[in-house]
Amino acid sequence: MSRPDAPAAVRLHGLLDEPAELTVAQLRELPSQHVDARFDCLGSGERRHGFDGPRLWDVVRAARPRVDLHGRKERLRFLLTVTGTDGHCAVLSWAEIDPEFGGQQILLATSIDDAPLDGAGPQLVVPGDHCGARYISGITEVWVGPFGR
Image (cartoon, rainbow, N blue to C red; front, side, top):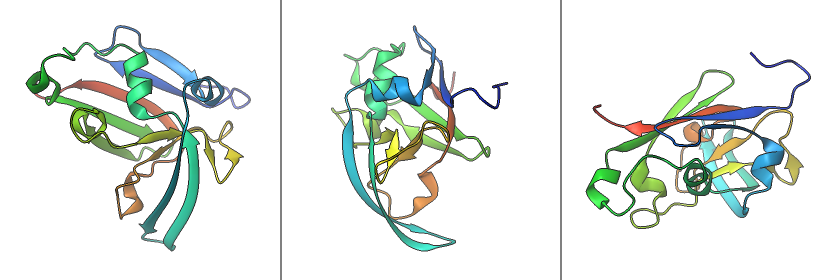
């Protein structure tokens, strides 16, 4: 359990050679992308925001997933679950983030509209989604592993 004064951190775990717990400041040290996103929020209608942060692909690759990156079919069995402070969880397929497949610019945002997210924690940004349900705030963990094992 984290202390109230501790910076927000996201735990990377699952089938990884280098599981980690990264703060927003540490995520900010990775190569960053900018995404202008527009999505529909059920409670407040259309939302438009600018997000900055590393690609989920880069964060996961740095944790060295135990997947054969040369074997295309094996990679398709891998999933990622992203969980926020409120327990909200979304599942992504490996193919969504892998450049040889969908290659989407899905981010673990470290800022929204130039406001840093150090206290709140990173936010999942899925720019291809019209619905905002996978824009998870305050990410606490990312799990990586194969389906069916």
